Amino acid sequence: MTALTQMLRMAAAAGTICLCFVPAPGSTQPAQKTLRFIPQADLRSIDPIWTTAYVTRNFGYLVFDTLFALDKDFKPQPQMVDRWTASGDKLTYRFTLREGLKWHDGQPVRAADCVASLERWGKRDTLGQKLMEVVGEIQAVDDKAFTIKLKSPFPLILDALGKLSSNVPFMMPERLAKTDAYQQIPEAVGSGPFKFVKEEWVPGNKAVFVRNADYVPREELPSFASGGKVAKVDRVEWL
Image 1 (cartoon, rainbow, N blue to C red):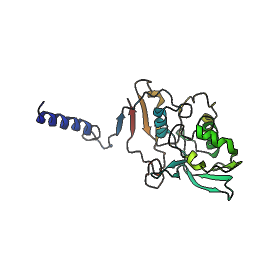
Image 2: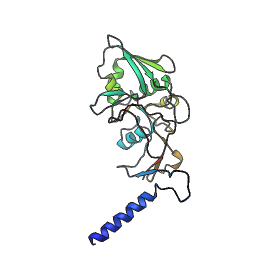
Image 3: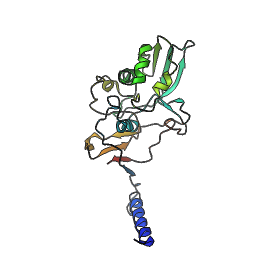
Image 4: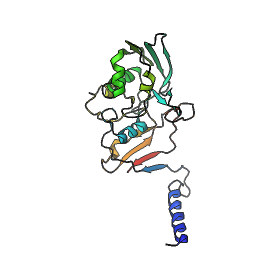
Protein backbone atom coordinates (compact mmCIF):
# COMPACT_ATOMS: atom_id res chain seq x y z
CA MET A 1 0.00 0.00 0.00
CA THR A 2 1.40 3.40 -0.99
CA ALA A 3 1.65 6.34 1.39
CA LEU A 4 -0.88 8.22 -0.77
CA THR A 5 -3.41 5.38 -0.48
CA GLN A 6 -2.97 5.33 3.29
CA MET A 7 -3.53 9.08 3.50
CA LEU A 8 -6.69 8.87 1.36
CA ARG A 9 -8.10 6.10 3.53
CA MET A 10 -7.36 8.05 6.71
CA ALA A 11 -9.05 11.13 5.25
CA ALA A 12 -12.10 9.09 4.26
CA ALA A 13 -12.32 7.59 7.74
CA ALA A 14 -12.02 11.02 9.35
CA GLY A 15 -14.75 12.35 7.07
CA THR A 16 -17.04 9.49 8.06
CA ILE A 17 -16.48 10.21 11.74
CA CYS A 18 -17.13 13.93 11.26
CA LEU A 19 -20.40 13.21 9.47
CA CYS A 20 -21.69 11.64 12.67
CA PHE A 21 -21.64 15.07 14.30
CA VAL A 22 -22.87 17.25 11.43
CA PRO A 23 -26.63 18.00 11.14
CA ALA A 24 -28.40 16.91 8.00
CA PRO A 25 -28.95 19.65 5.37
CA GLY A 26 -31.78 21.95 6.43
CA SER A 27 -31.79 20.60 9.97
CA THR A 28 -32.15 23.14 12.79
CA GLN A 29 -31.42 20.64 15.55
CA PRO A 30 -27.82 19.95 16.59
CA ALA A 31 -26.63 16.43 15.81
CA GLN A 32 -26.67 14.02 18.70
CA LYS A 33 -23.14 13.19 19.78
CA THR A 34 -22.54 9.49 20.41
CA LEU A 35 -19.36 8.03 21.86
CA ARG A 36 -18.81 4.38 20.97
CA PHE A 37 -16.26 2.60 23.11
CA ILE A 38 -14.95 -0.94 23.56
CA PRO A 39 -14.23 -1.61 27.27
CA GLN A 40 -11.71 -4.18 28.47
CA ALA A 41 -14.42 -6.63 29.54
CA ASP A 42 -18.11 -7.39 29.17
CA LEU A 43 -20.49 -5.67 31.59
CA ARG A 44 -21.96 -8.61 33.50
CA SER A 45 -23.10 -6.81 36.65
CA ILE A 46 -24.56 -3.34 37.20
CA ASP A 47 -23.89 -3.41 40.96
CA PRO A 48 -20.50 -1.84 41.85
CA ILE A 49 -20.95 -2.75 45.51
CA TRP A 50 -21.65 -6.43 44.84
CA THR A 51 -18.61 -6.88 42.55
CA THR A 52 -15.08 -5.48 42.39
CA ALA A 53 -14.90 -5.86 38.59
CA TYR A 54 -13.30 -2.76 37.10
CA VAL A 55 -15.75 -2.67 34.20
CA THR A 56 -18.59 -2.34 36.74
CA ARG A 57 -16.64 0.28 38.68
CA ASN A 58 -16.27 2.27 35.44
CA PHE A 59 -19.98 1.77 34.80
CA GLY A 60 -20.56 3.18 38.28
CA TYR A 61 -18.68 6.40 37.53
CA LEU A 62 -21.02 7.09 34.61
CA VAL A 63 -24.26 6.34 36.45
CA PHE A 64 -23.66 7.10 40.14
CA ASP A 65 -21.97 9.85 42.12
CA THR A 66 -19.92 9.94 45.31
CA LEU A 67 -19.89 12.04 48.45
CA PHE A 68 -16.19 12.84 48.00
CA ALA A 69 -13.65 12.27 45.21
CA LEU A 70 -9.87 12.43 45.00
CA ASP A 71 -8.18 15.31 43.19
CA LYS A 72 -4.92 15.22 41.23
CA ASP A 73 -2.96 15.28 44.50
CA PHE A 74 -5.02 12.35 45.84
CA LYS A 75 -6.71 14.58 48.38
CA PRO A 76 -10.44 14.01 49.03
CA GLN A 77 -12.67 16.85 47.84
CA PRO A 78 -16.46 17.26 48.29
CA GLN A 79 -18.50 15.93 45.38
CA MET A 80 -22.16 15.42 46.35
CA VAL A 81 -21.35 17.06 49.68
CA ASP A 82 -21.69 20.84 49.86
CA ARG A 83 -20.03 21.32 53.24
CA TRP A 84 -18.91 19.26 56.19
CA THR A 85 -17.68 19.74 59.75
CA ALA A 86 -15.80 17.63 62.27
CA SER A 87 -15.91 17.93 66.04
CA GLY A 88 -12.74 18.82 67.92
CA ASP A 89 -12.25 15.24 69.07
CA LYS A 90 -12.74 13.95 65.50
CA LEU A 91 -15.56 11.66 66.59
CA THR A 92 -18.57 13.38 64.99
CA TYR A 93 -18.74 14.36 61.33
CA ARG A 94 -21.67 16.22 59.80
CA PHE A 95 -22.23 16.31 56.05
CA THR A 96 -24.64 18.57 54.15
CA LEU A 97 -25.58 17.68 50.57
CA ARG A 98 -25.54 20.05 47.61
CA GLU A 99 -28.77 21.60 46.39
CA GLY A 100 -30.45 20.26 43.29
CA LEU A 101 -29.26 16.65 43.45
CA LYS A 102 -31.75 14.28 41.81
CA TRP A 103 -31.93 10.58 41.15
CA HIS A 104 -32.48 9.48 37.57
CA ASP A 105 -36.12 8.70 38.41
CA GLY A 106 -36.66 12.37 39.27
CA GLN A 107 -36.73 11.97 43.05
CA PRO A 108 -34.50 14.25 45.16
CA VAL A 109 -31.38 12.81 46.76
CA ARG A 110 -31.92 12.56 50.52
CA ALA A 111 -29.56 12.07 53.44
CA ALA A 112 -31.34 8.78 54.21
CA ASP A 113 -30.27 7.51 50.77
CA CYS A 114 -26.64 8.24 51.61
CA VAL A 115 -26.89 6.58 55.01
CA ALA A 116 -28.27 3.37 53.48
CA SER A 117 -25.67 3.47 50.68
CA LEU A 118 -22.77 3.82 53.13
CA GLU A 119 -24.07 1.01 55.31
CA ARG A 120 -24.34 -1.37 52.34
CA TRP A 121 -20.91 -0.38 50.98
CA GLY A 122 -19.39 -0.88 54.45
CA LYS A 123 -20.39 -4.53 54.39
CA ARG A 124 -18.46 -5.34 51.20
CA ASP A 125 -15.48 -2.99 50.84
CA THR A 126 -12.30 -3.70 52.82
CA LEU A 127 -11.67 -0.08 53.82
CA GLY A 128 -15.39 0.36 54.43
CA GLN A 129 -15.36 -2.61 56.78
CA LYS A 130 -12.48 -1.09 58.77
CA LEU A 131 -14.37 2.19 58.99
CA MET A 132 -17.54 0.46 60.16
CA GLU A 133 -15.61 -1.20 62.98
CA VAL A 134 -15.28 2.22 64.64
CA VAL A 135 -18.63 3.68 63.57
CA GLY A 136 -21.06 4.12 66.41
CA GLU A 137 -23.92 5.51 64.33
CA ILE A 138 -24.71 6.90 60.89
CA GLN A 139 -27.90 8.91 61.02
CA ALA A 140 -29.87 11.33 58.86
CA VAL A 141 -30.45 14.69 60.58
CA ASP A 142 -32.92 15.85 57.94
CA ASP A 143 -33.30 15.42 54.17
CA LYS A 144 -30.11 17.37 53.49
CA ALA A 145 -27.71 16.40 56.28
CA PHE A 146 -26.43 13.30 58.04
CA THR A 147 -23.86 12.53 60.71
CA ILE A 148 -21.28 9.82 61.25
CA LYS A 149 -20.43 9.28 64.91
CA LEU A 150 -17.28 7.30 65.65
CA LYS A 151 -16.27 5.31 68.72
CA SER A 152 -12.65 6.25 68.10
CA PRO A 153 -10.91 8.55 65.60
CA PHE A 154 -10.47 7.23 62.04
CA PRO A 155 -8.04 9.56 60.20
CA LEU A 156 -8.87 8.04 56.80
CA ILE A 157 -12.61 8.67 56.94
CA LEU A 158 -12.67 11.19 54.07
CA ASP A 159 -10.24 9.08 52.05
CA ALA A 160 -12.59 6.13 52.52
CA LEU A 161 -15.64 8.12 51.39
CA GLY A 162 -13.73 9.35 48.33
CA LYS A 163 -11.80 6.19 47.43
CA LEU A 164 -11.29 5.69 43.71
CA SER A 165 -11.26 1.98 43.18
CA SER A 166 -13.43 -1.03 43.90
CA ASN A 167 -15.52 -0.95 45.87
CA VAL A 168 -16.27 2.74 45.36
CA PRO A 169 -18.88 4.11 47.81
CA PHE A 170 -21.36 5.14 45.12
CA MET A 171 -24.62 6.65 46.36
CA MET A 172 -27.95 4.99 45.49
CA PRO A 173 -31.60 5.59 46.39
CA GLU A 174 -32.49 4.07 49.75
CA ARG A 175 -34.81 1.51 48.15
CA LEU A 176 -31.85 0.08 46.19
CA ALA A 177 -29.29 0.53 48.96
CA LYS A 178 -31.49 -1.57 51.25
CA THR A 179 -30.78 -4.56 48.98
CA ASP A 180 -28.82 -7.28 50.79
CA ALA A 181 -25.12 -6.54 50.25
CA TYR A 182 -24.64 -10.08 48.94
CA GLN A 183 -27.47 -9.78 46.40
CA GLN A 184 -27.33 -7.65 43.25
CA ILE A 185 -29.47 -4.56 42.87
CA PRO A 186 -32.28 -5.08 40.31
CA GLU A 187 -31.72 -1.77 38.51
CA ALA A 188 -29.16 1.01 38.31
CA VAL A 189 -30.65 4.35 39.36
CA GLY A 190 -28.01 6.90 40.23
CA SER A 191 -27.56 10.67 40.27
CA GLY A 192 -24.50 10.78 37.99
CA PRO A 193 -23.97 12.50 34.64
CA PHE A 194 -25.36 9.59 32.59
CA LYS A 195 -28.43 7.35 32.82
CA PHE A 196 -28.18 3.64 32.11
CA VAL A 197 -30.65 2.49 29.44
CA LYS A 198 -31.44 -0.99 30.72
CA GLU A 199 -33.88 -1.65 27.86
CA GLU A 200 -30.98 -1.50 25.38
CA TRP A 201 -28.58 -3.60 27.45
CA VAL A 202 -27.54 -6.77 25.62
CA PRO A 203 -25.03 -8.63 27.83
CA GLY A 204 -22.07 -9.69 25.75
CA ASN A 205 -22.87 -7.12 23.07
CA LYS A 206 -23.87 -3.60 24.13
CA ALA A 207 -24.53 -1.29 27.08
CA VAL A 208 -26.06 2.16 26.50
CA PHE A 209 -26.00 5.38 28.51
CA VAL A 210 -27.68 8.74 27.80
CA ARG A 211 -26.82 12.15 29.18
CA ASN A 212 -28.61 13.11 32.40
CA ALA A 213 -30.10 16.53 31.62
CA ASP A 214 -30.83 17.11 35.32
CA TYR A 215 -27.24 16.65 36.44
CA VAL A 216 -25.76 19.79 38.01
CA PRO A 217 -21.92 19.72 37.87
CA ARG A 218 -19.85 21.30 40.60
CA GLU A 219 -18.48 24.75 39.79
CA GLU A 220 -14.84 23.76 40.31
CA LEU A 221 -12.71 22.74 37.36
CA PRO A 222 -12.19 18.99 36.98
CA SER A 223 -9.24 17.59 38.91
CA PHE A 224 -8.76 13.85 38.50
CA ALA A 225 -11.99 12.35 39.90
CA SER A 226 -13.14 15.57 41.60
CA GLY A 227 -14.61 18.85 40.42
CA GLY A 228 -17.22 19.61 37.77
CA LYS A 229 -18.22 16.63 35.63
CA VAL A 230 -19.65 17.91 32.36
CA ALA A 231 -21.12 15.41 29.91
CA LYS A 232 -20.12 16.54 26.42
CA VAL A 233 -21.79 13.71 24.52
CA ASP A 234 -25.47 12.77 24.45
CA ARG A 235 -25.06 9.02 24.31
CA VAL A 236 -22.41 6.45 25.17
CA GLU A 237 -22.37 2.94 23.74
CA TRP A 238 -20.13 0.23 25.14
CA LEU A 239 -19.64 -2.39 22.45
